Length: 137
Image (cartoon, rainbow, N blue to C red; front, side):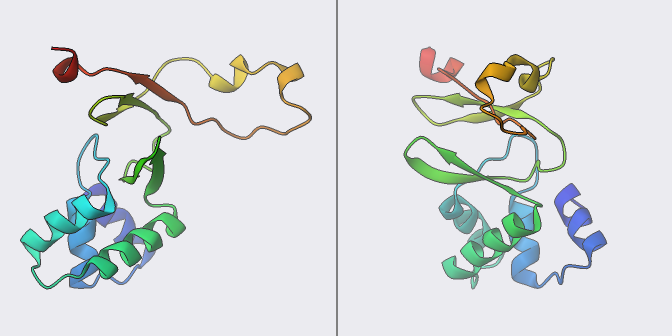
């Protein structure tokens, strides 16, 4: 059973065959798929699943806070099932590969009080950009 599936069962979310397949496709470390990629993989497990069902299920998972929706600089949004462990992302500027990273330190501490403009800051999302080894090679 995947971590995502376990979390959804604990919440009592009704797991239809379609919802289960979408959650299974999102299983794993460093998973950051587009909705179309989720659909392509879901069809292999459940051929009758529609693109609309995949999009709707992803939207529900985001609204539940079980999946993170990541915009990626003009590319299609990606979906990250690692919504329970705080992390940042490393993004390849060429191919779009994304990896979860867990740097040490507190990014909120790096934002001086003078740059907060009176905001009560509750979190930070960092994306490190670079070129992955496959693209650099």
